[in-house]
Image (cartoon, rainbow, N blue to C red; front, side):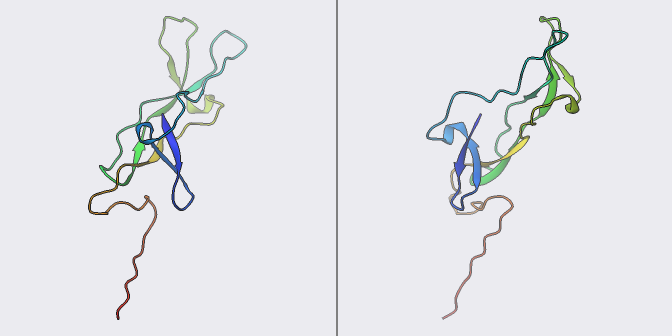
Length: 122
């Protein structure tokens, strides 16, 4: 689970739930029942988020996302199937993470952005 914050520039930033002041304990539903042979429709499943790629500032997190379906036998484990069989939108496999600022101020620019500091000679 993750929370969404709005960054200073107005863009969306995803952060770990423990860093959020408020969040819902409801998880998104990526599964729906099918009519037909009694099997579930294929649905998206995912692993837990990996740790943030940095120890401070902005980084990235990733997880495995795969399409699976429940077998007709309820005692069997779900089966991974081709991604094309999942009809709902695929969940993100990566996201930006934000940890506490680095003590030296480094790594505080959001990944993919460039900050320019302009000096002035007097």
